[in-house]
Length: 382
Image (cartoon, rainbow, N blue to C red; front, top):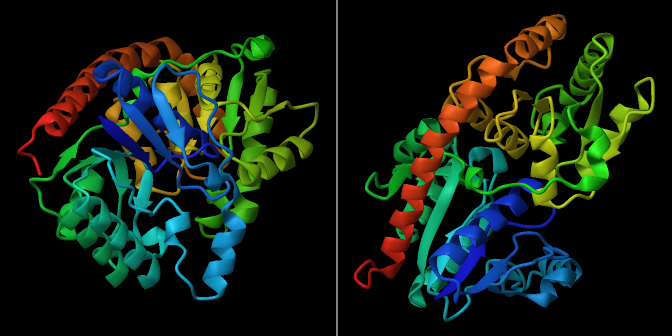
């Protein structure tokens, strides 16, 4: 079988983790499969692979930012140089983008035209399309509703990560027969602890996110002050911590700014692979994350976690794991110390709850993959 993985890249460690989670399942189902890594990131340097699978990617994607930009400025077609180029002889597309359809992304008519042409081309080639669990919505704008219409027309199976995303899709006109609810699917994939960071085991892990500045009102000043207060509260309790970059240069700048604003030499961990990121998170005493898969990787490894949020997906991943009141308001800093004390006092109880919920969610995720492979093997599905 020829399988293409859409919606992932090597910049965002959550996206990279989802790529590896998909590879893990493909290897179990069809170790002879040919896999094409269709990165959604321009100038993606690629993912380092140690896989028995036949995995390929478009080498030109490492250098496509400049030519794509030039063609755009000249008003010429450029989609053929991006991830929106419908390849022939692909049996199945597994789209593992975590969050790509919402009014928050402000899609233009041009980008939606490219999207529709891409999916139309895939279907003309006889390709089946499955959206793996991801967040959706809200959809109130004309282009937002059109994006759902496109997805509904061409995608065969759609997995929403949670009920809110499901409701947004159905409310925007998506066919309920196509949509199912399953939680984040990376919980079936183990991390790999990076031995060179043995000294960070048992410490608190802080994970910033630039979207807390770009996607939140008054985020720039408020968010940094919030993170500084959080760090001070940890230091007052003699809780050692480090800062982990979960994405690229944008997050790294915030990591450095936070570290430089604090007393002491606060370590910033940068340029780890996705599996190492998950392994390091799993060794932490506690995680406070502004990145979705920072939260998910903590919870599915039994590590107590708190988060800041710019989208409903954060609240819902906690709900999946039976946790309440874990999303912090960045404008309310006075109670942070009390929240930290409460969480650490209940660490063993929280770990027990997370262990039970992981088993339930893992069973659901295994059933999801069975559904997908059954669908992909059914010659009457198209």
